Image (cartoon, rainbow, N blue to C red):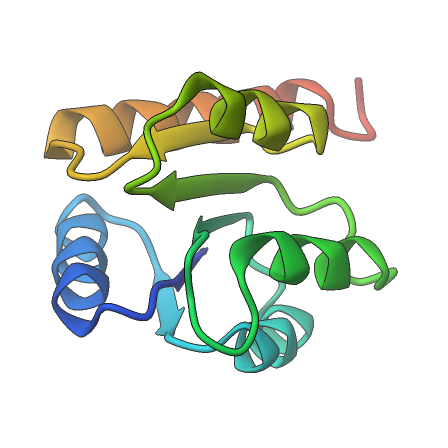
Length: 127
């Protein structure tokens, strides 16, 4: 299951539809606080999170997830319109699995998701 956290309704709905059509289970929200509740309830395999959102930005969402025993290990993909290398480096330094610059195409997001999920399964407890 993939959790999408995106305040832009069109982007959120389009991304959810794309992922559902590709066979993923999806839950989506526009709010970081609600995302934390959803994650604790549904235990997603991956989070795709916008960075620039009102109330709680992507970095604050990541921090909140890292503080919870139920959500600390869930991999994050940040999506942002911020395209400077320093932004991607900051995300990587915080342990974000990948950083996508908007607008990204369908193939790019699907490749990124599958790569993150494959890496997650490679480092699972059975390895």
